[in-house]
Image (tube, rainbow, N blue to C red; front, top):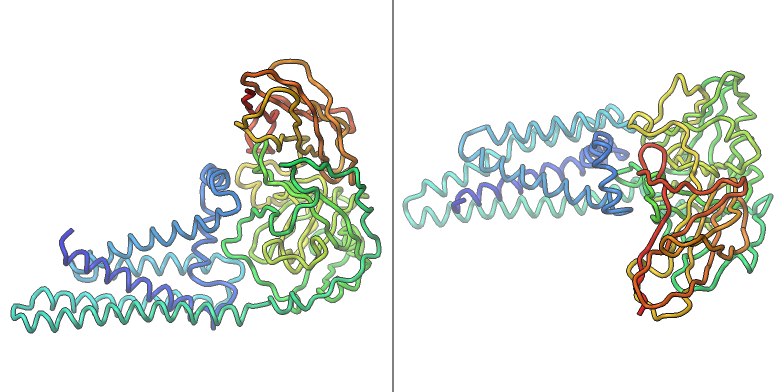
Length: 509
């Protein structure tokens, strides 16, 4: 590209930045819960093909939303540059691209469940602003190109650079103001900090000393909150005000029930350790964690509503519109499925569902662990389809018996002699009975199991093997308390969770 094209591209980027910031700034006043950028990001996640989603999770893990944001910024910058160049070469062609940007933003905003009538103001105003300032800036570039006198050329160059610099400054300052306003208006951090969790009416059983094995490389028995995995579809973490939060029970019930945060906190809450797992977790993966949860049994709330006899599913809905379909019997049996308000002794972090989320032992999160939950609709699997079920995943999602080797790491080099292996195994709401390890294709050898916290949590294990110099494959498998042995055949996470034995390679010598 020549110098003029580069300047036109710069003009387009600055204009689109101003349009985007103006939209975010206006949305802070007219639509705090949804803005054009967050709406486009959320819509992108919803429309993304399933294989691409799986690739993003496998590649970026819990940083998948940040990766999407960076990708969006880069794509928008490239398209903005194209708009600037197009406008310079042909009047109103760049304007047409900006109008298209704005229409996409408008459609995305309109599609969000948090949208209100005033939510459309920001993308429309942004389009108007772009239509005005892009031609004005490009006209200054044309004047610079047309100038023949050196003095006139210098003046035209100065005017263009001043206008471009002013636009960039407006974008930066506007972005800061928008962020500040949004943090003030949607900031519930102080409210979260002011939440005092009540003492549980039923405390979790104390963790036995024998439940934790002191071995380097072993994951902590209770996952620290800041290390707990986060996989969801929220482009930006919802900030829900606990003072306005309400949960409705609707659908096939004798009576609809509504509860607010204060009422929930006044209920007899129970404390339990529960291990949660993501259905996207590959064999040997780390999308799993164990925590202490404080909450009210969901069965108690459903009992107040009185589910109909022919109901078999509860469709839970998040504040951002995400849904999960959970078997009704799982929420009404004896297991400790709760509306959680606390995690590891503190109010839920925003990333994990503050003020209220669901925690259901024995099911993958995509069918049970709804964060920022606002509605429980009692219904039937034949009548309703949840978010991930429409995208190729099975409807019920029981967690599969699994195990992994955490230490040593794959590819490790160790001296000859005794090698101690360690890891975790899980069979939520069933419990792990045994773990075995295998060297190459040799016989399975029993591992030593740590004490169990409960049938709803993972268990640590260790095993000693004696190895001569060489290369070895080490494999682990588990057996649950029903006598079922972990499936050996490999299967990917889609459609119902990964299967297969976790193996690592080590070098001895």
